[in-house]
Image (tube, rainbow, N blue to C red; front, side, top):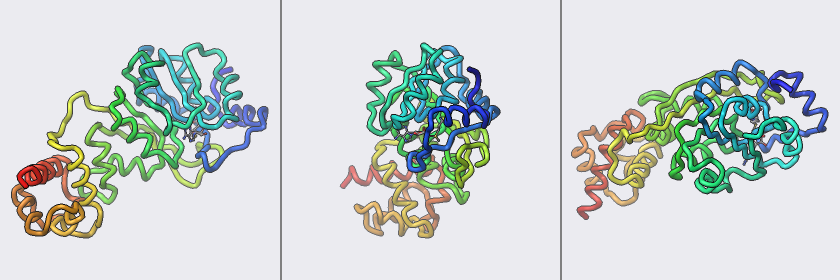
Length: 289
Ligand code: SAM
């Protein structure tokens, strides 16, 4: 069996197993060779790679990764896909399928047990309803991940990739870019999937930096500051930072002055560097109290 990414091949597998697509599990299978090739090259898949895939579906992308990578662990929640994957991935000794909900998997443990302790790459066509929790789980849980190359809804990719001042820039842009360099790898309009979803998709590459780029003294306060600043989009920082809950107006004014940031600016105009500086001043202020 070769590629599964043509409409015909996917249809054959689905029909043979009488598989019923589940909308609530975000089951839209990719049927475009070109995008699959771009995912592999965007993730620079090589024979040294240990890969985690979330939601292999019928194994379309899994097979292509299995042809090159050292090992692929694919986590699929839908048990009705397991016998199909057994068949479509039959010839790959280096691919292991686990029938679990990714949000309930201890990824650190999995990397230790099955992927030689890492490093790992996360490569997937993600189910839309949990894109952000999955990506943030990999970035925040101290997992030795070097690259995340994932298909997500176009609007989510735009937000992850946005620069200060643009309409898409917000807490998600900062949460991702705090850890990674971002890159748009490929566009995947809705007609490249079966069944066809009612949104377009984009493959985004998140390349985790080896060294931290931003000097943040207290990450919890940094992310709280970001959250408060975007809490009410049209408010100036002087007003929105009240959302932190522990600084009064005079104190906010003082902190902004110390950080050299005009109190009339809005969160969406601040670079990550400026947020880091601001959060460090908030932390300093807290420590002095
Ligand atoms: N990789 C396949 C492809 O590209 O054609 C399928 C991608 S489809 C967008 C998303 C896949 O994620 C489905 O197979 C779905 O069953 C699976 N899935 C949904 N929720 C999941 C979860 N919580 N944990 C693991 N897999 C999940």
